[in-house]
Length: 159
Length: 99
Image (cartoon, rainbow over all chains, first blue to last red; front, side):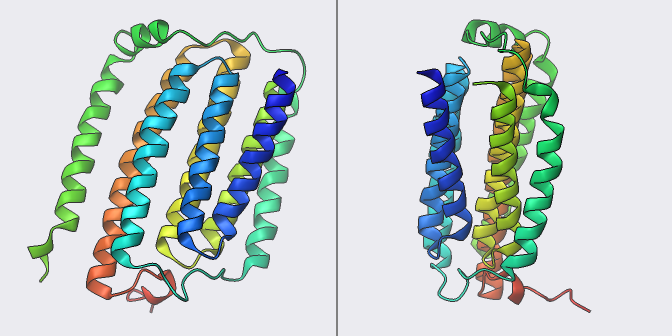
């Protein structure tokens, strides 16, 4: 059952990833990205990390997809911009990088995993004890990103 | 399901995203591909954390997701700015710095 779910999710993830980079319409690419992100959330559920799956769907899929679709609407869906530029060298480099990465995964094949990530309680405790400083720094980063985005997108700045 | 198989899937998604970054003409298409690559890295971290039973890996992935969201917000603001000032989001046309 687990293996079946794994293969199904892998097929969905790879197919939607391929669609996200090759789709003619950028809107289709954005929704293929959403499918890929949701399939990743499914993987997190398989890894017994429901907290990650929830964050992935709420923050990543919901937030990022909204932003991307909004940007597509504002900039106007491109007519000539959707085509691929010199796909062959890019594909060759992609295959080479995949080969390099795949050769590095060999040591992880053996043995069933220990498993049991789980438990939002443990994650929350870690987040507010050992990783409190990075957590607070992250809030500063998000604040900076919000201010930066506002500043960049302001209308009266350049006109 | 083993961590090795998951890492293979993550590597494949990362490579597909790399292809997209190199081959897409439109800036938003490139950002979509970058998201795929980030997502693949997060998946790989989660797979390794799962295989070792490390809860700290989940924290790392959470940080990664938050940083990615900040990055995409700034990236899209830049794209919107370029679209307004230069009237295009096609990367080949944004060549002011070309010598």
